[in-house]
Image 1 (cartoon, rainbow, N blue to C red):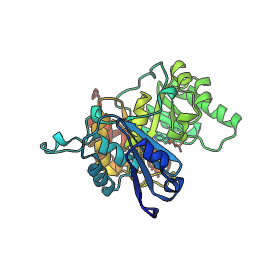
Image 2 (spheres, helix red, strand yellow; image 1 turned 45 degrees about the vertical axis):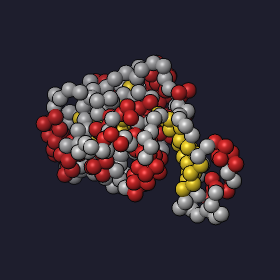
Image 3 (cartoon, rainbow, N blue to C red; image 1 turned 90 degrees about the horizontal axis):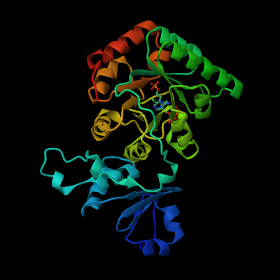
Length: 326
Ligand SMILES: Cc1ncc(COP(=O)(O)OP(=O)(O)O)c(N)n1
Ligand SMILES: Cc1ncsc1CCOP(=O)(O)O
Ligand SMILES: [Mg+2]
């Protein structure tokens, strides 16, 4: 054991006995503590614990160092290290993309719904995320068919009324409306679906959402969260922020197009994917070139100087993909 621990140190303990004997100061002073057992690896960073299980190659630790060096968050670097396979080295591209080589996140089973979530289309296309029912109606009139009501800071009665109105309008236009955060009100209004963040997974009742027949979209910000999200078999997985955004303070730095392309390689055949964060008409073609089936946008519509023009241009950006199947 080292005599002194610095904030940037990563401590590696090679058994649960080591972990039990480790001084508690290690866990608070170090950047991270890895506890390596036969079948599982746990990473503790502050008060967060990330536990992964599954086969790994002998050089997983070197791979972990390399992925940290590529600036992945420690828990994402650990996922990639776990998925690293030496037999890929002969191939042109050794980056882990085979879902079967990826680890399992430990400790999620009790939160999972036994009923599958209703499916949604593989290509959701243009997906505006807007703050109120007025915006929903405006976009429906312009022919938008997938959208989200993301109303923040409304008191209960107002929120309930906005959701009800937006759901009714979407139904009249035969459109797919997701409600952000407020899953009980979404069920009450019989919305098409709900969109939840990772932090909602511990508090929302996924079984109730699935039983009510609503679709579920989940946010992710990297590999670890993608494994968590996919475990719940949602109707789609959103990945962001792809580019910098001023709409919301993000928990991670922007993912960029290369990472987005890797995420798509991993999950494309498994679940519909939505890219979000800093997307506008100028970058839409590059985003779609990664193979993602949908782009969610906020400012590209809410701050457009000419809304109709902006929506038409964005819709046309999807046109080459129209009609593509899974
Ligand atoms: C399509 C889509 N992707 C991601 C988000 C972000 O959702 P969440 O993590 O729940 O954060 P808030 O939107 O609640 O701030 C989203 N809304 N839509
Ligand atoms: C809600 C949300 N979740 C991830 S990025 C984002 C905001 C996207 O907004 P914009 O399209 O204006 O960058
Ligand atoms: Mg949310």
